[in-house]
Length: 217
Image (cartoon, rainbow, N blue to C red; front, side, top):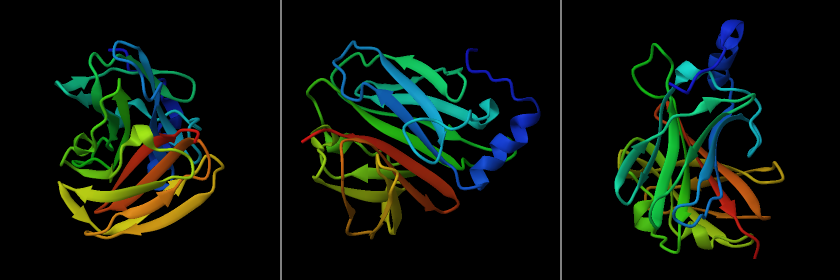
């Protein structure tokens, strides 16, 4: 098993960080590869993406996977200095939901789910963004076409149903922006600059994040 980490006396600090208000995200580079191109995935924690500020405790990571046109692919990650890393290759064109799930060892339900959307080739399809499971943030436009200065409608779904809530966007400049989404109206965000944007929502005792890359106009 590749996913391992020397936890030692730091384990309580890493587990407590979930309750301390840290965010969690997954970076996929490149975010818009051609099929057959290896993609580096980084499982991160901290306050300001894309760089991770600490190493997530290995025993909290219960699932890392990529879901695409031909099903679910389980992935393994390896502990680096401040993040976990995996190399994954999309085999065909299409949309892939790539993410990981965090759960405290004694809890029955996950406490956080981090996701990004990878679009391989020239086939982008917003209808493939939602899994209809758990808590998730779902864009209503093609993420591969999202540019700095353009609007991004974003909805909250819980177990496949739209719900109301407040979404936080952390911009490449580190500035938080808050917008509210209702069950019938998605929140509307505008990217101030190219780069990675982290969207986070908390609902029903769990947290979901979505990391997206706005491209230059």
